Image (cartoon, rainbow, N blue to C red; front, top):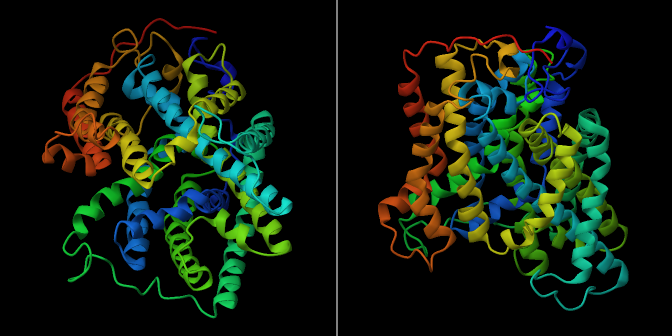
Amino acid sequence: MNNSELPVSPQLWNEDLAPTTAAQRTWRWYHFAALWVGMVMCIPAYTLSASLIEGGMSGWQAVLTVFLANAIVLLPMLLIGHAGTKFGIPYAVLARASFGTAGAKLPALMRAIVACGWYGIQTWFGGQMIYTLLGVLMGGEIGGDKIAVLGINAAQLLCFLGFWAIQLYYIVHGMESIRKLETYTAPLKILICFVLLAWVHNKAGGFGDLLSAPSQFVEGGKKAGQFWSVFWPSLTAMVGFWATLALNIPDFTRFAKTQRDQVVGQTVGLPVPMALLSMMAVIVTSATVVLYGKAIWDPVDLASRMTGVAVLVALIILLIDTVSVNLAANLVGPAYDFSALAPKRITYRTGGYLTAAIAIVMMPWKILESTQGYVFTWLIGYSALLGPIAGILIVDYYLVRKTELDVAELYRERGQYSYNNGWNMAALVAFIVGVLPNIPGFLNAAFPASFPDVGDGFKTIYTYAWFVGVAISAVVYGIMMKGKTVPAVGAPVHP
């Protein structure tokens, strides 16, 4: 359908949210594979193994946990991504079919705020690389005393803001510039991984024994018999790592040439590269024990210990990597989501500016102050919110709609997806019921001093937060929508 012929409501439509045309569908399977390789090869993904091994896992257990989590999250990626390719619509528009034309703003806003947090975290990593590089070049620590309230020094703040400014170029130049960046940098990232492995093998005379070291859960170990109590929350956190992309993957698949391109590209690009990166992190960190007498999980810290031109090359590559990951994973989605909140006033580009601004306000360095805060509060906490949305979208698209949507109606205020004043109460109820069981566990994890008396049952449920949310909301939504007829179509609305 030609966009100009679409009967639409101005409050629900703009050029960025409109279905993609045939000319815009330029993404082949290798573009999706490159996209995922580009996003997987990032510092937070590299350091995931650290949190697992600190929790007591062996190197192999950490790698397999990461692989399993990504194989699990691939399923909703492919299921939800199908709608993007079939109808050319972004996530924020797809959500209108289940939540309603007004109600869809709720999941769009939730996805956007989480992405703003991630955008800030990645920008902080980028800023820290610039800070480290300047320190190496100047021969010592820079910055001075920490600024009250912020908790970082002036140099760290300026480096953070400097890296934040670098990324504005891609906000201005849009989606095609991001596709090109991902496609061209992905092979470089793979090459750099092999170079890094060769470097540590040469320096350390081997790879060390971290990958072959036993876990702390074996008999006689520090945490003997506690494997499952660590495994399940860890798996949930690893699933949560890409839970945001599992929702807004239509933002990318809407540009796919065919369904095969998005399915093959994502399947090739996500689970195996993620596991290989995790393995490389364990191997390289194992070698750092030999080289420096302690495990160094932070690649920025490791790069700063290199000598000569190697440190400059390593940190520049890490900077390029962080830009490409941040833009693809954490800018595209919220830019569309913010645009969907007020299409008449907010374009994709304006949504990108909003994302970048909110990322500063969230002070991401505070989220990263501890592994506990990073894994159990941040990753599991937002997976508890996003899991129910994924369950509702999948049930609605496959069981209620049978993969058929009236695209024109998604852009009409008084169409079949308007439900009750724009809200589908079935989706709202299913979402609330899916989130509620995880709230006590979240409060205990985030504010243990204020909520010390949360029962063990709620703590256990929270360790399965994403899975619990998906299952409950899917069942509740499916029951509430069972046998419901499609609401009557309202009078045509023209732009």
